[in-house]
Image (cartoon, rainbow, N blue to C red; front, side, top):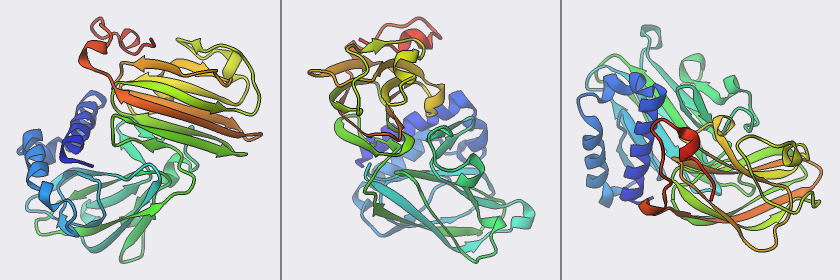
Length: 322
């Protein structure tokens, strides 16, 4: 991930955290430095992206493999590091050289996905594990280290450390995922294919930018309809079929709380395309397990003049289909 994209992604996460309440979670650790210090740090590290080791900040974005060491210079009561890989990768996180005091309220927790207060990606409806099973808690483990492997291309770590000179090292490794499901895109443009082979599950591809999405291939086992359905709520026509694709828009990360823009349960002849003027645009494939379902699509960032005009505080107007 380039420095510019990493900075844009961090800006989105911090903006989103402010709207959703995570600001309270991180304000103690970042109030002195602020977002400009964070982005300046990213720019200074541009030439070091491929260095095997570097310090870990209280609020950080990790997009490369390596060893990242956090050492507290003062109490850091609310820290989070977001980790992201390529769409066809999963992430292994391993702790070592841990020097914290769990009895004093210190903690280190790894989460399978991304979580911002009140919202999770992937949604609890789409993740194979129960919500409580997605957390790995260092202080609840008897082992000297801790390791965790993500189910998708994003993971994160929360930590709180009270005493100066306490800290830990986080090892980030990436592994190939032959059947990627529930992806957070690093880029505002590209193409992707999601496949669900005879499994009852849901997979989402999330682009945290306003984009135009062009569906280029759709195979759902059976033809159910002959039209694309623009919606403001889920219609039973496609959702009742058990196998369909829905396009979602919203300003959070939890797909279950986003606005349905359109649903499809047929194979369109030609390209189906639409613009979603939201902070987060999602292609979600729902599968009954009876078929091999497949959807291919392209996406590109909308220009400023392509964004819909909105009324203040009107999310429904902002997230619309064209």
